[in-house]
Length: 186
Image (cartoon, rainbow, N blue to C red; front, side, top):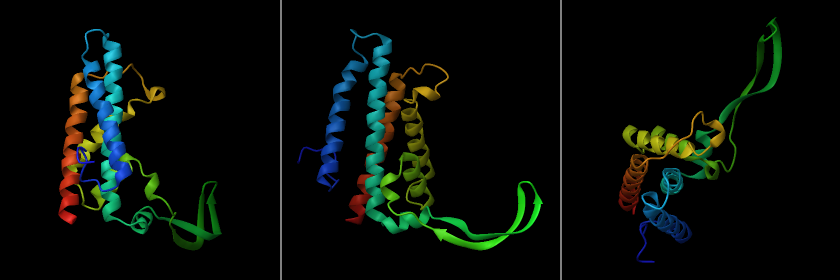
């Protein structure tokens, strides 16, 4: 697939899915400004394009994360300390106790595949693999995308041409970043 927009992605299935999604977005763009649709319909076309653009951002960042961090490294990052063999030594009040026990670090396997965009970006930022500026941009597209959840809305969200351009700009920056980092490690 030499005409791919994501030729730097070596995973053929992911690259094909990215290209299909990208082509779908390209097909939606003319509808976002078409005169034969009202503003509500145009807003919904923009919303769909933003959701798909954010999914491309998420996939590219996950691909980058997956190329530089092992499953074990991600599992360890999300490991939590849990109190085992808890013994109550003294009851102070109804919700306050003095306890003894063993703290053990518990890791859950398979954590990496379940990461969402916020977790991927947070992990990469905490590991100093993305800048604060890129992290903030990623968070901006994440927030735009998450406005799709109708049950959390306090008003009707209209997606503007500026929202769409913001999403595209962030996606372009992420693509450029991931491509440069993957080429550097090749």
